[in-house]
Length: 119
Image (cartoon, rainbow, N blue to C red; front, side):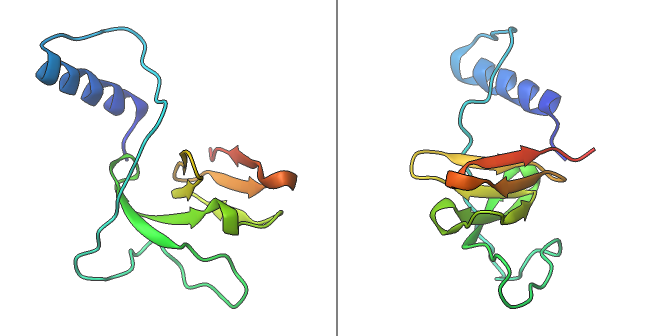
């Protein structure tokens, strides 16, 4: 699993390679984008079969932050009270919300997503 420390050090290393300098100060993840390609078409082992009426991902994306194929949900298709277990990505018109492994995203009234991190 990719930790925040790993992500920070990867950022610093990439910045050094691209720009010849390290920032060495605090970093904030503002946006993260991911694309998934399953060459063999197999569904990742962490995806459990769903029964009728359960929420289904619209697609999967390869997400380095979460270590591989990650379910993607369309925010416009979510209904109040639905829960998504991380790892997961939720596509909004202008951003992507990442739910970390162990996190739960609950759709609240008005479509707001409330994320609770696992322990």
